[in-house]
Length: 189
Image (cartoon, rainbow, N blue to C red; front, side, top):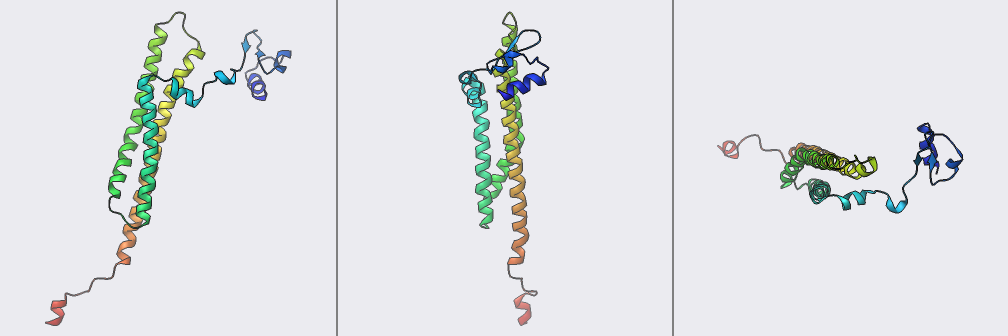
């Protein structure tokens, strides 16, 4: 109720007797602003569930890519921590590729969701209100956000692994025994 009052007062809505009720608030123009019942609210899981099939592939693909990026980052960091740098280059290359591709997939999903929404708006009379458009806009925003999140995870993981690998490479020559200064056959002759 506090959020409804705060939001209503921030918009300059009149504080009438109806504001005391958490069910609705009346504006100066007489229109009603009412919170959506909890059972009908759009949630993050609802955006995934109610997205179109192509958008579900994009959203779930970007989610899986973020999880894979974290897994590769952690596994390769453990390998470097154990001084086993063999095979780390493949993980670093994967993270670099994902850092470049994830925002593009997110933008593709956003463009697809917006295009689908605009086609829907053009084919409906009268034009739908924001309540009808909000789920499609949420899909588009989630797609872009997941693409950026996945890319950010990949970039941070890539740079972290490169720095650890560089540190390991710098420490290895000091840990190896020094090579003899002259060739043993020359010393005998």
